[in-house]
Length: 450
Image 1 (cartoon, one colour):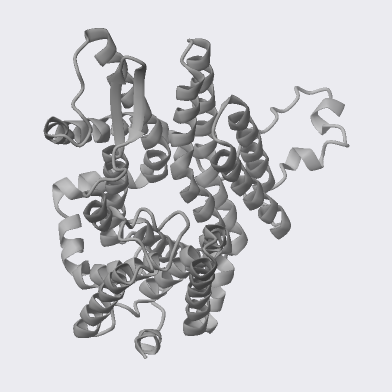
Image 2 (cartoon, one colour; image 1 turned 180 degrees about the horizontal axis):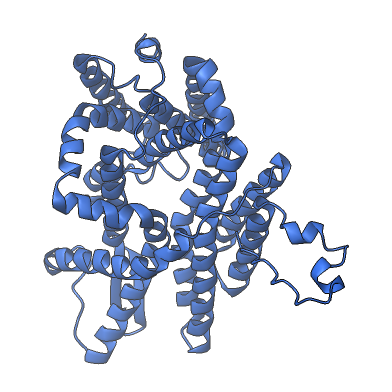
C-alpha cells in the first residue's frame, strides 16, 4: 500500500535543477564514509617474521555499529538512480537519448579506472623487482581489487538505466516490486540450500532495485509523501532489518551483507532514502554554507577518482608504517588495543588527507570530456561487458602484473567500442584532397582514448 502511495504521490519532476546540493552533500559524505570505513580495517603489525597486514575488524565488536553508521553503498546506488534519471531526462530535452547517456557513463567510469589499474600493475611490478615477498605483493593486489566490485556493478546498472527508466515511467510499482521480489527469492534459495554462490545473483537484483528507488526520488514522489508516512517507512525498514538480525536471516554486520549482497541492503536503502527525504531541506541549507560548499566543490568532480585511489593510498600508508617501524625499531600499537584506538583519529586524518592529495591532480583524468558516443547499441553492450569483465578478472584472480595488464587491455577495448568512429577512418580509402592539390597535408584529428 505504501508503494502505491509513493507511485501516486506526484508526477515526475522533470524540471529538476542542474545540481541538487543536498544530493551532492550526501554523496560527498558517503565518499568520506567509505574511506573512513576501509581505513579502520587496515591493521599493521611487525614481528620477527616481518611485516603483517590484516583486516583489523575481523572478530571485533565494533565493526557491527560502525557498519550501521558507514554502510552507505545502498544510498550510493539510490543517488546514482536519482542523478542518472535527472541527467537522462535533461539530455532528452536537448534532443539526446539513452545511447549518448550510456556512452558518456562508460567513458566517465572506465577512463579513470584504466589509469588506476595500469598504475597499480606497474607499482606491483616495482615491488616484485625490489624483492618484496611474493605473498605481500599478492596481498596488496587482493586488497586493491576488493572495492572494485562497485565499479563493475555500477557500470552495469548505469548501462541499463535508460531501459529501466522507461519501465519506471510506464510501470513504476511493478518494476521495482519485481526486482525486490527477485532479490528476496535469491536470498531464500541461498538460505535454504546453504550455497552462498546463489547470492551473487543479487549483484543484479539488489543494486538495480536500489537504483530504481532513486527514480522515485528523482520524480519527487517520495518528497511529496506526508512527513508522518516517511517516518513510518524509515522506522519499518529499520525494524525489519533488526528482526532479520535476531532471526538469523541476515548478519548484523552490514559489511558482510555485501558479499554476496542480501535483501538487508534493501532495508538499509529504504531507511536511508526516507531519512534523506525528511532531512532534505536542512541538508540543502547546510550545503549552502561556505565550508560544506567548498568541500562539495572539491569532492563532487573527483568522486570516482577518490573511490578508485583510496585503497592504493591506504595500502601505501600501511606499507610505509611497517617500513618505518622496522627502520626505527619502534613498536606499533597492538591492533584493537588502547594505544591503537588512541592513534585512530590521527590515522584517519592522514588517510583522508593523503587520499585528497592524490585525487586532486588525478581528477583531471575524470574530467576529460566524453567523446561522441557510438550509435550502436550492441557496441555499447560489448563495451559494458568488456569493462565488467576487467573488474571480474581482478576480483576472481587477484591483481598482479599480468591480470592488471589484461584488465587494462579490456578497458581500452571498452573505451574504443563506446566511442563513435572517427571521421578520418571512414575516409581512409580515398586520397586526401589537400595532397592531390599538392598543398600541405591537414593535421590528423586527435584520436581520443575514450
